[in-house]
Length: 367
Image (cartoon, rainbow, N blue to C red; front, side, top):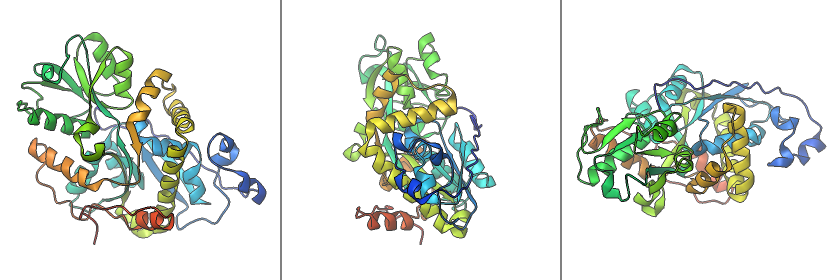
């Protein structure tokens, strides 16, 4: 991703109405729920805030937000409290919006979560849930790169200096025993920081030989003839690592814990629905992407991308700690103090009530 600037800021006003109880009782999730009712606030009293402002990216790794918004699952949990949505193209711009009070809650990757927390000395945000794991691949030109060792000497794109994929690729390069200057990207591999929107064109013109990127960019490269050389999940224990967290402004969490809990119930219910209805969920995410970007993903792209993403409420906290260590080792981050970055009390309350296992903060929870 390029400079921290919102791709779009889409604020959707959700009108509060009183609906017939029978009609509300009949509303569910999925295609049957795609009626006017999902675009208005559900019947019920407002919570402690009139509105909650939610930020996310128009990416498949943020599909919990895409589907939860599209299907009205999050709004249903909010009752008479309005859900307003803003979309972003880069983590830093979303952190800026959270700091400025333009959004209250956001879906975001681990690196901007870490950076936002450490730069504010632990005062601006908390991670309150996981959302997704995986969905990151090294895709290469098979005519130029046939093995992992062939990556040496080639030009490989990552989305942004210091972003989650950039850190992961630099760490992988280091483990191969190769040397690269993290800031310039020069060395045994040329690391080219390239906006995900233009990476497929850069690949087509031959400006890059491959890319370490999230979905759906990875599958867009495959559609252009690229080959998946490595799925990042294979580098992690149990093939799991956090790619998307849910964060909240500490001020909003303190003042409106009931609203935060409602959004989390919506997220948990959305992930449950996604995992039970993968084909419907894939179509729903694509419908929201079309609404936000003006164009849906092609079948070849979304069908290739979807299976590599796992939707999970577990923030996989130990992998966030490891990602922070990788950024330190690459010279992109000073040793961070992550104590207190997580507050999973509301999430674990919801999971326990649903009969699901509670999740761990890896010792990094707020006291």
